Image (tube, one colour):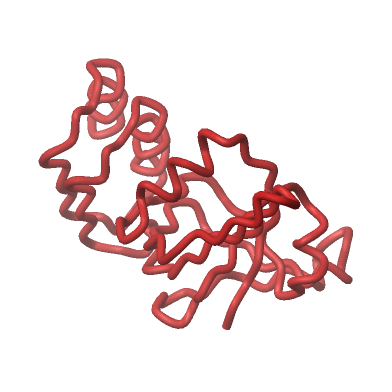
Length: 160
């Protein structure tokens, strides 16, 4: 299944996605997506096109509970990891298509390898928040990251 998310991204963020092609990243918050590409294309200058065929959970279809049922909303859980496949840009119209493959969702895993993910302090805080509610994670790897003292403190506090 494919789902879509429209967003308004500044040029620096578009450049970050382009530089990260082939790498794995994580959205640590819940992400609202749609099965309806046309609806998602109306939001912002970027369209995330996400392949869910490699994830276990696949997101949660909440369209029947949504205030906007015609948007065919699928909710991706916090901690959803993805691979950036490619970024296509139409600079004339300032439109960008970012292709992702969703890999897994952290809250269902017993093991999470966040090595070499280039986690920012904000990412580390989001991981810490996820760790506070996670009931299944048994192993967590952070090698080869330049996590700030603030980020490391957030994670350490969550693990107490």
